[in-house]
Length: 162
Image (cartoon, rainbow, N blue to C red; front, side, top):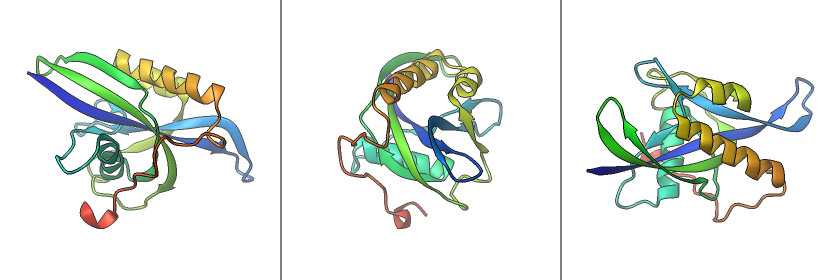
């Protein structure tokens, strides 16, 4: 059995305390529900939504962020050690536009913004590290301020998830 999951790497441009936006960016990681690992938001998708809409919904539910889901970073196949099952992970970057104070899984997870090298260190899975490297390469060759997403903003209406 082959399971497909999508994951989002939420990112933003770093802003200094005096409000100056730099070209350095940070990524948002969340704790697993058991709290033992750090990861990027993930999930499956419903039949009535696109993969990008699912990535957007999962980022909202698990991390409390809303943004623009951009062009897929790639696809990684991996074996889940805990379940002994093969998974296919589709990775998408999300340029975060809003961070919510309240979100569905806020009592189950912690979220934290990290520098890229800190996030690479914190994520235990090799394929998450690889996807992060792809994002770094993409952003260093085309900063988000000039980058246009492949599709329109796929923000999921808040009303549909509560």
